[in-house]
Image (tube, rainbow, N blue to C red; front, side, top):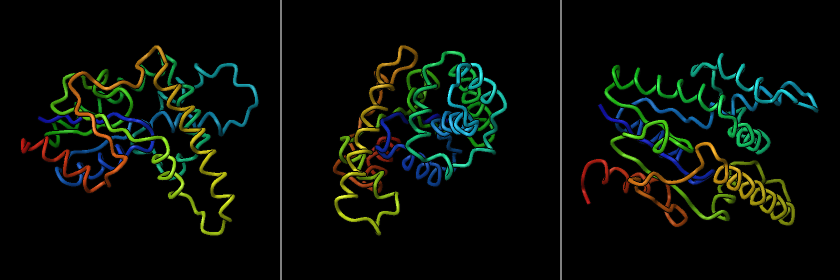
Length: 218
């Protein structure tokens, strides 16, 4: 049974890598960041200005979270992403989602012979004994441009596009700081992870590098 753990920064390409590996090997893939985003989206949907019980509400939403119910399209806003990073510091919330992620791994290893998880602490906390660990990163500028390309900006003037880009850079920098500085499960590469910078390579090249590692072609 094979476990593949993928960690990395926002917009580095880890999610796309997880999906591509899932297609190639037939192992179910879980984007664990979407679990935090789903909880964050639920919190934002309450539309309360003062969420005093943020941690307890997060845990309540997390307990009822279903993998099937995760809707990726509605979770990709920068606001949702930052809220996800904000609540990710809560130990109780992380433990609830950790157990769900481990459950996903155990079920799918038995059923399909393997699993692929990507997120922020997969190789260090969720699957510390994973067969393969990868840490994917890229420069903030490159990651911001990738996020910008995901948006419909064809109708915007050049100065507005540049303004939006700088805003995304600011948001990503803020998220990186929160993810890397939290006391519980900070964003760091596992000691035995393959670290890959995707600043100058595309998803196909990244996939080729990772497949060579998995299949032992150095």
